[in-house]
Image (cartoon, rainbow, N blue to C red; front, side):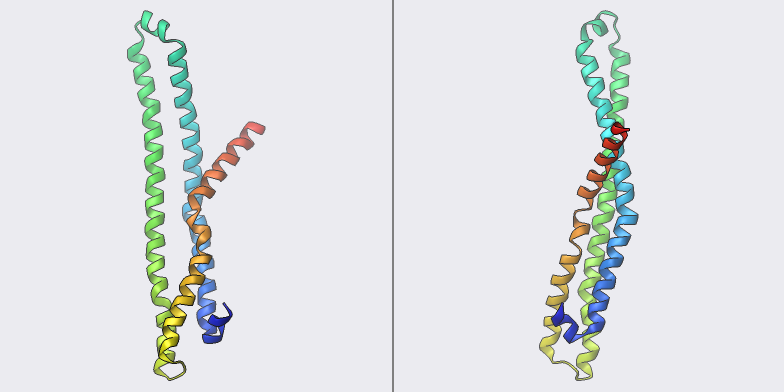
Amino acid sequence: SVALIQISSTLFYALVGCSVGYTIFSLLVFAAPLMRVQHRILAVEGDLRYVLVRLRENAESIAFFRGHGYERQCSEKVLDHVIWSNYIRCAIEVAYKTFTGLVTLCFILLPMMIVAPMYFRGLVSFGVIQQTQILFHNLMSGMMDIGKELDAFARLGAESVRVQELWD
């Protein structure tokens, strides 16, 4: 980061600002809904496990009273909730990965947009452009690491909410 500041303090401040903005936006727009969906997935998977255990335990009674049609409808309904909850999670993850890809593409161009005018004014040599590109990319990938683990954070948040609910 010191080398980047020596080349262009504007580029360093742009790096810090972009990474903070990216992290805040990711947490607000993607992490919160993903955490709610993960919480819902935990609940509906628990419901599905309950239904399956109940079916296994009461299989003879269900067969004797010919309740297989009703039990099948109930099981399919719970399974549909599990599947749709996972579809929603996948949709949020796809939107997040698309957003991350677009941001990464923008971050490839940002150093060029800041350093290229400095090159044309004669303030830096040609090799500095590539050097800033590499420095910026390495620092940005390190600063974006928290966003790469968004799914793990959301899963952990949902599980901790579930534990808190059980605790209370």
